Amino acid sequence: MTQRIAIVGGGYFGAELARSLDAKAEVTLIEPRTHFVHAPAMIRAVVDPALLDRALIPYDALLTRGHVVRARAASVDAAGVTLEDGSRIAATQVVVATGSGNATPFKPDGDDIDAFRAQNARVHAQLVAAERIAIVGAGAVGVELAGEIAHAMPGKRITLISAESRLFPDKPAAFGAALAAKLEKAGVQQIQGQRVETLESLTTPHAGSLRLADGTVQAYDLIFPVLGARPVADLLLGLPDAAPGSGGRVKVDPWLRPSSLPNVFAAGDAADAGDAMTIVATSRQRPWLTKTLLGLGQGKALEQMKPYKPWGAKAPFLVPLGPKRGKSFLGFVSVGDLLTRAMKGKDLFIGKYRALLGQG
Image (cartoon, rainbow, N blue to C red; front, side, top):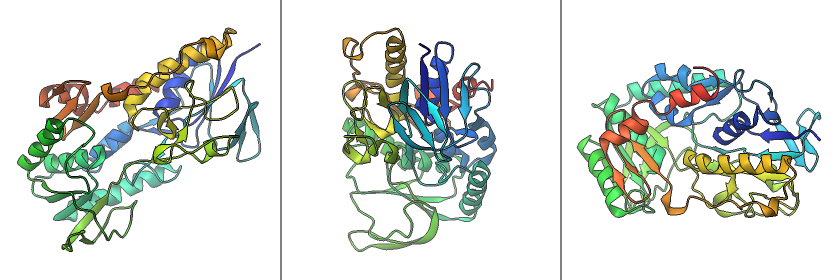
């Protein structure tokens, strides 16, 4: 029997999984966009739009044997995937990797890549014109954005605002303190432990005033709301016996199954598998699922194969502050500017993902 694997979502997990299975199974990747959006580069592309076209990568060379179907999935069942136009893609196994959304222009709010390019150009123009800039949210995107603007546009007055009392409270205190010191040296003002009570938009950069919990009110020429990723999990929640997990994700069993359907799997940001919502999770989940799916194709029973084991506290975490500075946490040790630049800051993994998608 031919093994037919349908993968819903062409983000980091879906694209890498499809590529890894392409030579060994009949693969169909279902993705509504024409281009892979390399999200970390979108942070830098706000200050350097020339980067945008290298980081928006066409899907047309991703697979050599399999197929990329430009469509949106309406539902998933044990026999395959139903698309929004009513057509069907039959499959012996289905993987749902619908990922997450974020504020624009860090991720698109739709499928139109030309509209996304226009959003980038519009926000870049706002940034160029702005003198006072606020970034609301001090997760990885917010901190990296502050570092990118400070590096490329050193005359800007940047304020980074966080409801947390320190940067990255889930990491060792010294890690967050080192990043805070680097940002301060770059001229970024930081307000920590203060919740923003007025925010005109949660998804779109805009001008306006912010009132903090202590009553302070300040006007800004440009406000970036960067309050974290939002899992895209509606498709998974429609499965039988699926249950919400933490942070809007969907619970999965030890073999990354989100429902009572034995041949449907979930991975990436939408799956509550014990990993953080970062690209790093793909580097652990993808090899495991590739091996597991191929094992199923060889007739092995799923429960006789090893269950998935998440990264836990050992997951690497890389935070560049522009192309030259940054800090990274590598399991149990932190490294500084030189290694962060070499690992991520210089190229932001653009070369890696262009190669993955067959673009050289």
